[in-house]
Image (cartoon, rainbow, N blue to C red; front, side, top):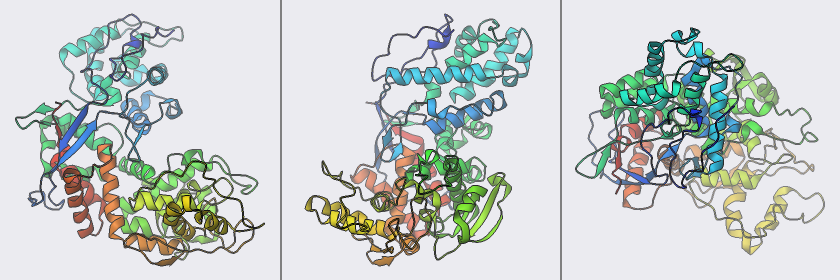
Length: 573
């Protein structure tokens, strides 16, 4: 039986959660922080990635406020997997039981104050993990029927710093030992004391939040401590907790060296965890978080199965990794390559578009094929089945949504919300009219014209792909598809025809390159940029280097991580 819940915590503050104690000592690890307290950072422009000692002539701007962030759903799940390893069953499902992520700037940031409902969700998930854990896999001595006090101390000394992602004092270990208490066997034969401790730690602020206390300096800035830099690195590039090597670097003080951090970026991108970390950013950038739960109309797509959603998500993960980690790492390759990594099921959906196929490298996992696709029909990530199917209706394509994706996420041009009562799409002008004709009628409405002039001509370029991302020449009503369009109000304002032409135009656009940098800024710091001399100067410096370097993504990450901002934040007032 679980303990009775405590009264709701004060709104706007991170609770020191002690619900899992079952009458034992209260778990109190770390400081109680205000959830919306602003922690801002100073960010001078970074030196070039390939020259760790290079100096920058750019000004040293200051970042705006960055609030304390909770782990996202994906980060929580991956952290649990890395923290417990074989101590948990492979089939333990947690993601849908976790609180939904809060968005800021198009990326999961989780900076808003938690509610009682959110706390209950975290409590339930913590106990789900605690009740599934195998204590003998946590530490060898815990396999004993009655572990000794020395065993408990050895386990805590190894487990607590990893779980809390920071050094743990002797006093804190004593508090944790009080929660662990003497061995106590549950009705199912499990160790209640170990479960109690695991549930308590997983509800600790230091586990749930990426807390950065840092150390103040005379200029009013806070320099992050080594373990806090390690966490910034690991959650940016891997989407999970630091490994032993990062923790050792943190303890030795090496992560305060910008040149060394650039070296660490290279090591981390060569690690197998980088694929999931990069995919987390690109999944959110391209608005694909719902891909795993893809729904399609089986009257239109009789062979569609709900099991295809996770496999299409894997296509995205693996194809992003292929472009960034296995090819030349350039944004243009991500946007134009006619290659993909796919499962057998996804490969079958491409049909005769597969020009050649070979087993994918083992690093991609079992059952993956490296596909060469018809370059006249596929070019880059925007023409992947996964991306196109996610940005469509269950039964038809959605040029409005696809056009808005390009406008907002690749060109960084935000769109106004639709006017109240706007119908999408409007009634057809005649029976059997094409979707394009219906949208053109809709765009003639003065209240809708401004936005749809920005969206629809881009979406029409992708009308050669149906609701499952399959290529086509006719729409659902049998009308010939017209894939002509243009991307106005941008540096690639020209008449285009089709998705492949769009992909190549986007790849040649400096505006797209600059927007991509801006999206990484938002992802890394968990907030939108502020359009003032501070943020603009820093982002502009990153953008100019990225463009000059040919859009090389690993170099961009090295410059971002090597910046002074990555290891500083502004002191709280």
